[in-house]
Amino acid sequence: MKKIKIYNELVFVLAVILIAFSVAITIASDFGVSMIAAPSLILHLKFAFLTVGQWEYIFQAALLVVMCIVIRKFRFVYLQAFLTSVVYGAILDLWRLIPIFNPETIHDNIVLRVVFFVTGIVLTSLAVAMFFKSYFLPEVTDLFVKAVVDRYNLKQTIFKTSYDVIFLVGSVVMSLIFFGKLNGIGVGTVIIVLLNGIMIGLWGKFIDKFFDIVPAFPKVCAYFEK
Image (cartoon, rainbow, N blue to C red):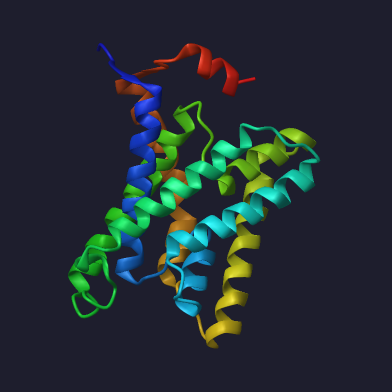
């Protein structure tokens, strides 16, 4: 079967829009978001003068600094990862302006909340799989894993698991300190932890089977792949 040709750059743009949408509807479901998205949501719930997206800028910038300290290296292309975070945060805030994406609006509609949550985790895994197919850098939260693994020749599975656990524990601690209870994370967070990796792998195989992803700008691609 002939594969569908699609440009790498378009895949990246669609991934950013899609992951912002999927996080927005996952937040709206109020079953708990992923441990990676949780810190910015928890900070927003406590300090609402900044949106979730705006807290994301701050969090990702701080994480970028930590990453550079840990790997003891800085490249200008790393700033693109932060830019991705800024664009993602802005689009996330735009999605959340839609009334139906407000958790309070659909709080009593359990069917819609379940539909939002299931759709959210499916589309999040698709978006991440699309990021993996692009030569552009993903958000700093994902870049951190790749950079540290490459720098110290670590096993990616072990480090990624440890990384996720740190985020999860940190989010739980933040929530308990701020609210005295779990807020922003819940049973949905556990489901995402269990299923996300598997679903990303399945989406990756699907993309490889049906799509031929090529760069529209080979020279730019070569620069990012150095």
